[in-house]
Image (cartoon, rainbow, N blue to C red):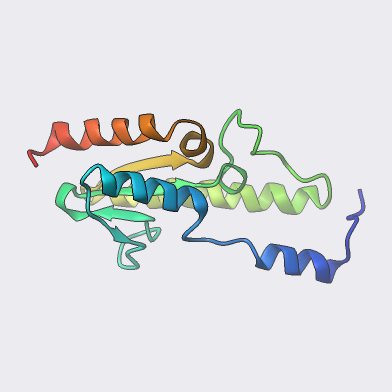
Amino acid sequence: MVDRITKEHRSWNMSRIKGSDTKPEKMLRSALHRAGFRFRLHDKHLPGKPDLVLKKFKAVIFVHGCFWHRHKDCDKAYTPKSNVDFWKEKFRRNIERDKQKSKELSENGWEVFTVWECEIESDLSSVVANIEACLRSKTII
C-alpha cells in the first residue's frame, strides 16, 4: 500500500511525536504526587532512562505508549498499512529493548513497573492504587 502523504510530510508528522512528558506520563506523575510519592524523571544513569524513578523504594516506572511498545490486545497497538516490514521491525526492536532494560534494572535490584497509556486513560486511580500497594508492602513510609 502506498502512503497517502508525501515522505516529507510523514517525516514532519513523526517529528512531532514526543518521547517524554507525554499526556499519560503527566497524568500519572500528577496522581502519584497527590498520593504522596516523590520521584525523579528520566534518570539517564539507569538502563532505559525510566520515566519515573522512586529511589526511596528502589523502583522505576515506565509509561509505555500502546502503539510504540505494542500493548497486547489493545486497539491502539495497530500496525500501519504502509511500509509494514519497516513497522514490524521497529516494533520488534522496541519490545526487545524494553525487555532488556527491564531485565538489567531487575538484576540490579530495582522494582520495575510498566504502565500502559490506555490503563492511565481508562482507570488512573486503579493504576495508582496498584503501584501504591506494591510499594507500601515492601517499605514502611
